[in-house]
Length: 211
Image 1 (cartoon, rainbow, N blue to C red):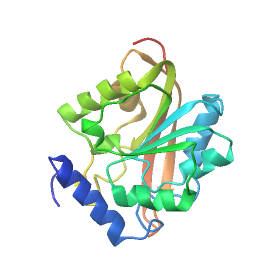
Image 2 (cartoon, rainbow, N blue to C red):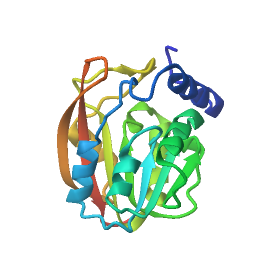
Image 3 (cartoon, rainbow, N blue to C red):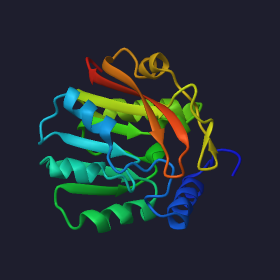
């Protein structure tokens, strides 16, 4: 695929194919331990009863690690049923986790969350999709909530899984949050894929100041 899929069915089909054609530990974004995510969650001082929403969490083991840290209100949202199936089978039937198979761009949050966590979804969006994302984030994050977002850095790849991405500097990523959020920490991470490719990321953690 050379361009961005334009419909929910196309997006879901693309990512289902990626997960069906590859082992969960073979996709380029696989991490055996989500170190940056966990460290930034600690920086934000989230309590174990905080409502955490993992955007595009798919087959990520972040949910496993947060359960091990006694978090009790976790939601994982992903467009790929195949990805979520992998995590559900791994985690088991745990009442502390809500699984949502939805296209983020068409999702309507039914509640607010103390943390919006997104590792590598935002950089797939362009044009009006960016505004849709920001609107959803503003509606889904609680008045005193926080966000953690990671994207490819300016020297990172310009494509991922056959799709174009938008690369961000730390300042650019922080600016996309708008004036309602205060950045409390940012960092650079150099991720090595299972195939040995180096992918630089930037991360921003921010607290909401006002709507």
